Image (tube, helix red, strand yellow):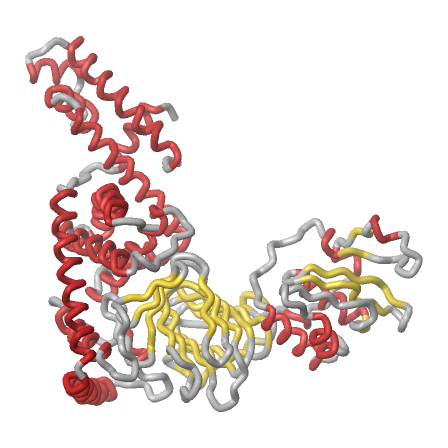
Length: 392
Length: 170
């Protein structure tokens, strides 16, 4: 396309383009920004006066109790109250006025004093003041990511959000009866710390996921929710029928489109490889001649290598634990504890892991999507393989 | 990222109109679009001392504006199709490219503003209104040759602008 054609295309694409006077817009913006800043200073001054702060807190409690009673009427008792209240009816005319009232009261909650309207940390906006019609209450925070963003909760749970994800997350998981996240849009990998007393639940527009301690990925987009389980078991249900849940095993991917569930992938260590040649493993020339490992193979040479998902170290350890429980590998605890270095590099020496090839080969194939791994046939048992090294 | 108010002002003035036009292309309401973009800049302004942007300014503004737009649509229960467009990841990339178009258009407008009124009028009648050179000549009572010269002059200037924006143009 030559420059003139490009010019015409741009003019065509932007037909009806309107230019506002940016100098005037900037003046207006600056005046609002400055008045907003001065009102924040005033708010800070109010906080320093104990009596007024107590009165404000008391007023907050009264209003919050009122709001609680109001919202309680239409509440689904199976879900955490405020995290599912995105559907609360917001008046269509001038919603900002009412919204501001709600937000103001929340920000004056003495337990969760607001520090600023929004706190931006590394490319994610974490705010106690969600825009639009979202109601964020005391122990909740609204989160909107611009790039990848990892949130480590106080109970050790790690949530890795993809860019462009919006979610409401409790500020503190410790002590919460239910560790809940509302995924409004986007996707995240959840590496959940086990806690039998406080189940971990994720809500999307119309679906819920319940786990006790595991690693899995959730994607939400309008009425579509997709769950990819990596380790442990996950229960996946429609909010309209919480008792009719689906159980996901490691490697399973299930999607709910708002009406029904579809199993997109049945996977994990249960996949059985047909034979070694199926894995397209080439001999590693550098080490092939080592007398101790005559048949060493390097799985990194697999030609159809896919990009490795960004799993956390903790997730990997959980994965190994799961495999150990399934008797697919042995001595996982010993190996993992001995060789886990500060650089997040995991080297597992020869002989620590071995298993029957029927189980091990599909396992290795599965692991290859997560870590760098090399292994060789072993003479420790018939048809045995040993893990030679792993690097994460 | 925003070292000073001057830097922020520069970015505000550069992107305000493209962003407003971008939002308006979805919600078809100039006043709401202005408000959404003003709010977007306000959010960034309030956290300007803390924010670290690893992506480009344009990508960051796009993402933040998109978030603001989704919230607006959600709160005002606007057309679900718009929301669907904004939430669709593949669409999302195309939408960001659409913002590029508006950024270029803003540059074109600034360049047009530098042209002499008559020159600009002739260019707009030709490229935007679709009149033939002959029609323009008759309308303005000038020669066809003069129309062509004016159009060439304006087009060359605008081509230069497009070339300068080649880094954002795909």
